[in-house]
Image 1: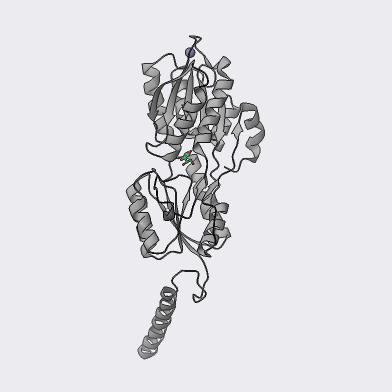
Image 2: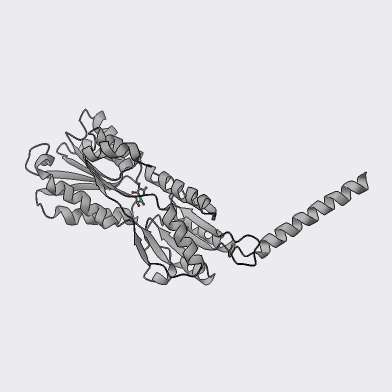
Length: 332
Ligand code: GZL
Ligand code: ZN
């Protein structure tokens, strides 16, 4: 009995070894010699800080599944050092392609040089890096955040008549900024400032980061409300901080959308519901559903095809009326 068991066990371990040996032979390069021609992607996500990020993660994971791409996925909890070590681990694992959404713009050149030296193509999604050397990545797929900020500012200029809610002749805007150093935070502030310059009665009198989270938006808004009772408008760089601000405004006995106008960016479901309910006045969409385009790009890049260096996401804006119509069909 024992002898038979040993033979069976060794046979199993031998075949298991053979399988792994064969598996490790395949450099995951999707190359012909590997038994499976599956592409392996390493994705280093920012975190799970907002409804937008959740929708973005779902889109990436679902599309990888749908397109038969093996996805290695990490959540960096908003820390750049975690993203960098995730990218390094993907390099060691010899993935076919690396994609990530850089939590902040700076500090990526070294690890991107390592990926380049390892011959692994990189795709930027959602947020940009400030590297001068564009050979460090194949393409950048994501929104035009400056345009998003301009759209928010243009709406305020067009609706200035109803925005001076305290009637003192100036439109006092406080800004809830996204994560410090993040491309969307930098660019949305820049675009907004450019647009509101058209009307000198509009002024951003205070601006602070809420780190793209509800809690961050609520805490910063509470402090702003205690310091200033002339606030007419809140411009929040994402819905989640706007929703946090709504909680603070209501706790102060004021009516969001009326006593204080609110403009946000993203257009996730919770934000669109608040817009439809009249608590937010205008939302600039930032589309998180990057999965389909990302996986197509990954296949093209691994196949050595030329891809556009910059692919801008399609997106729009919503008023309260438009939100009521759009809500039933929103995917996120
Ligand atoms: C924008 C994205 C931002 C969203 C936030 O593309 O990077 O990060 O606007 C998210 O909701 O946290
Ligand atoms: Zn005013």
